[in-house]
Image (cartoon, rainbow, N blue to C red; front, top):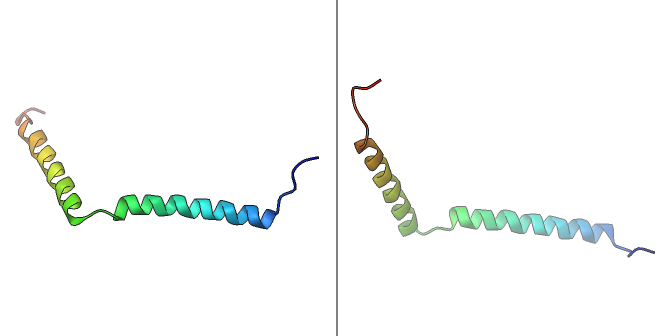
Length: 60
């Protein structure tokens, strides 16, 4: 015979696991310092300037 499980407890455990995954994603997205954000923004700006500098003007 199979193992007896409590469905209420299983649902709560699944909900906790989903909440923990969502919380981890939010920490990665929003839990950065101002220095990290400034560094990423500077890197994006540098990449944009490099790409714009390599453009050929006048060609269509």
